Length: 127
Image (cartoon, rainbow, N blue to C red; front, side, top):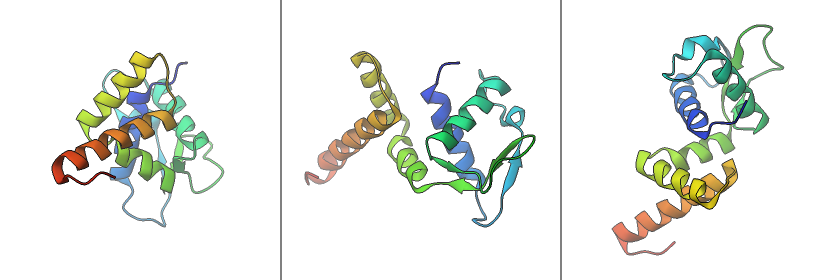
């Protein structure tokens, strides 16, 4: 199965909205995410990628069925904050695709560069 960065972003947005209590661990069913255009198998695969990439803390060694979720990690919050804006996400994703390849780190860095430019345009301050 191929990694789908649009699905990675959607899952991080969804998970962030679910984490109200930093001390609780939820057991989630990948089929319950109901993301249009994505199967439960794709969601399950990408949830595991989020753990592998250290973007999500499961709060334990994993459930026998379902997916354990405690919270986004610091890296997960950083990545999500860099790609949260739809326009920034679209421009970063399209720019990386035009270059012929990308990683989550490269996408995050590209998005951060676009955010820096947007800040400079609004404030006149170069960061």
